[in-house]
Length: 107
Image 1 (spheres, rainbow, N blue to C red):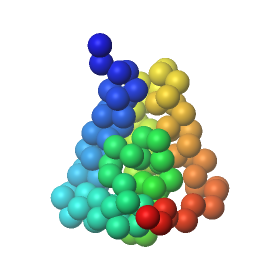
Image 2: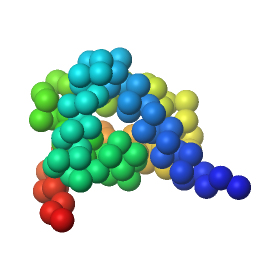
Image 3: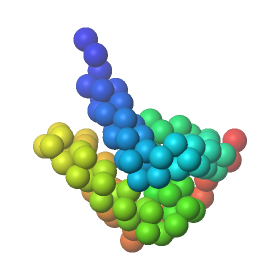
């Protein structure tokens, strides 16, 4: 049996990828992936548990961009928000705007 959390993680990662491609094409996707890896030592699927990494990467590219990405993700994932973990991810995305972003992990 497939772990439902893994499926949700994949759904969020795919939604983030589609959103980035829709907003800024391959260039934006590559820029975000680079920041995620270099600053947070993470990949797109890690944003499911750590949405602050995604918003931090997007904010580096422009404040308006992070807001647009959050709006687009909420719309894209809205039909799955009845699932607690997806709603939690979306709520954290919204709350991050008002929080101080964490320092990147140091390995």
